[in-house]
Image (cartoon, rainbow over all chains, first blue to last red; front, side, top):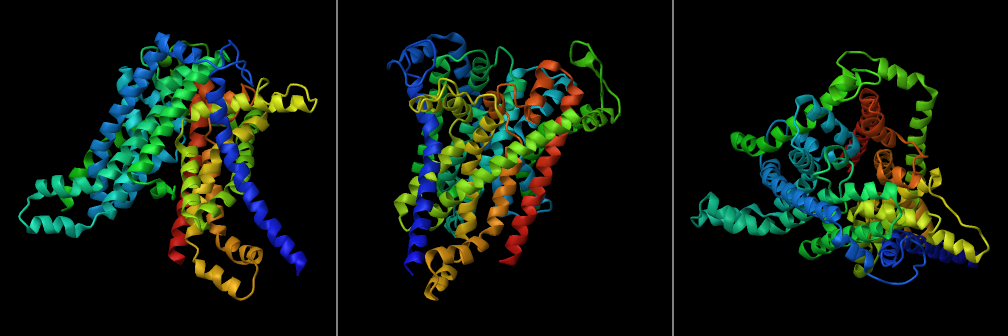
Length: 269
Length: 284
């Protein structure tokens, strides 16, 4: 009996040990990189030889890096807006109407999530070369709209499913027309879903390398592409500083989601 | 009503048709083209043909079989590690009594999915490199500088790192679907916590474990930044080779062959996952 109890307590302790170690493994590298980014010297070492914001100042004063940051922000913002514009009506149709090919379409629109982004990148590179389309920013934009649509679709579909249709019916019975109903009832109720979808879309576009690396040129390097080029050539703490900026921005995104609609909605991948 | 639906879906469908489906068709046609050796420029390097010789080149070369095997091996090793480490986390999120703990772990894991991946790959490079924390810790025990960068183990650790959140999250929903009253019943009948886990929870979460494994395999085979940065040009998985063929070697048709193979692998896996999920729903 005591032996059995011993096993019980070991089993439960092992479970907690596994949880704690796994969570530490997840969090240590990002914390580490923020620490190393404060290295004042020219080479990254651990532990750092001091603490300074030297490399952040360098980031701000280096034109190509700031240019890349600007490109990334503009690209991610536009991709978010366009994906919402074409994604939200689509989500509405899929949730509210029954039509032929609905299953196929919803599978198609979320498939960019599970297909290798690098293969999507080279297929677009091939395609644009074949048809002779050379407007780089346009290439990046359509690629990112497709890349982020799954996130928009998933969150807004969840919002439409959670929306009580009788509320809209009530508004219509009280004399509101379609547009008024949408503006005064539907939109405010699905707003958290739209925000969450938009924020995920922004974060995904902002972090993409697999597609952007094949489509951007020297005038339209995004921050991840620039960072990747830096990584291959040097081991400067500047990379740690840029990475930290990326980490902090994307982490802020998670916090925004948690505050607007709660992260619980995203448990089923 | 049906017209309204098609009107709402049309813009997205058009975008996907022109910029998603057609590009994949273009890539497939490229894989059947002929590469003109030594030619400079896109148009000069590719002769539009309909030949399977690129595929024959790939599958008749033992080196490429090795690269293919390496890709699947790193994905498989990382998947096993990620599911093993992700299960306790997913189980805790699904079953913990404390709401605060659930929330904390969930935010933590979701951050692991969405916080900048390129930033974190670089942080792993610092962790595992010569000047890294692992090397620093080793020096206290009299070990020399340790540099894992450029080894397959570093790539395995990196892919595992990114797959843990994927595995944990897909297991959360699988474990949540298990009726807690079954576990209660086992306990009421005298089973200990450990027995309940092995005889009830674990077998019932087996479909979830399979789904998580398959999902991780599909994602793990597509990692690109991780093998490039942590493998430092020494660990040549298919995504690394595709990047090389399109950006440096400029043998586009051969790069297209490898892309098609990787894509087919992903499609088979996705189909498999859907089948599992659908059949699981049918049972319920």
